[in-house]
View 1 (tube, rainbow, N blue to C red):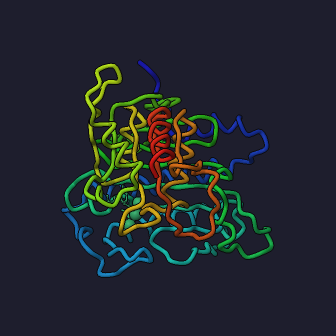
View 2: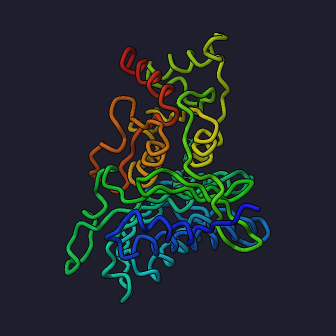
Amino acid sequence: MATVKTLGQFIIEKQADFPYAKGELSRLLRDIGIAAKIVNREINKAGLVDILGEAGTVNVQGESQKKLDIYANEQFISALESGGECCLVASEENEEVVLLNSKFSKDGKYIVAIDPLDGSSNIEVNVAVGTTFSIYRRKTNIDEEPNESDVLQRGTEQVAAGYIVYGSSTMLVYTTGKGVNGFTLDPSIGEFCLSHPDMKIPEDGTIYSINEGYYVHFPEGVKKYIKYCQVHDKETHRPYTSRYIGSMVADLHRNLIRGGIFIYPTTASNPKGKLRLVYECNPLAFIIEQAGGRATNGFKRILDLDVTEVHQRSCIFIGSKNMVLKAEEMMHEYS
Ligand code: AHG
Ligand code: MN
Ligand code: MN
Ligand code: MN
């Protein structure tokens, strides 16, 4: 019987990869795992307790906040505050960066960027939602107060990144730059257990994920790529299958396992793209690249994009390498 390896055991084992680390990153990853279990518990009860529906507030994105957006945000921030390794959080749900000032955390070496609840529109209808997070080293000195400049770092500077997908099972998938590993929550012991070691995304795939409701305003290259996906061609296994959940984390997780491409291009209502670079595109791009895939804005690598604002948006083409390359070819030719 294969022995169960928990997230905690795995993190300690892998710490050997970082001889200079004194365990801070390990503890930070464990703190995130703890918050994920607490949020998971509430998501699984959603509908039974008063945690559904609108909070009656609007976030900096102009989106009406769901109660679970706010609950998840509070849980992750308080887990990071008590953990002590993180000194600042940038969150989709907070306009300004949040300084963690407890006596433990103000000297934290790391900062965390987070989308506490991705796919909020799916909560009431019991469809998978997620969390995404990025971890960076703080740039400000330990004797300075951390500030927004600590977040404005390129995706290539990430120390670690990951996501939690609250789906038919709850999984935590993360990378520290040495491959991607997936852990499934075993509720009977309350532990994330290694279930998907060394995850790799197939170089080719037959799934494309895009909200075709916005087709009319898509760039010409995206329209051409969608038509390419729909043409009958036995040799290249087309037409592909269209799958779009409306939670980027869930769409990306399926494509990571099966192969596929997720595209959120520029649209009329989001001329710079809808997804946020710092806490959605960069963490997922880091993971997909570490799993052998590709992530660009159609022209430039996501991880190389300059970060000038915390809530900066970007369009994104992410997934199986050869599918993203094909879509880029059409963007170069037609857009
Ligand atoms: P969030 O719920 O964190 O605001 O993110 C939702 C994002 C992403 O998860 C999803 O792929 C996308 O919004 C769906 O947008 P559309 O409804 O415009 O397709
Ligand atoms: Mn949102
Ligand atoms: Mn999101
Ligand atoms: Mn969100």
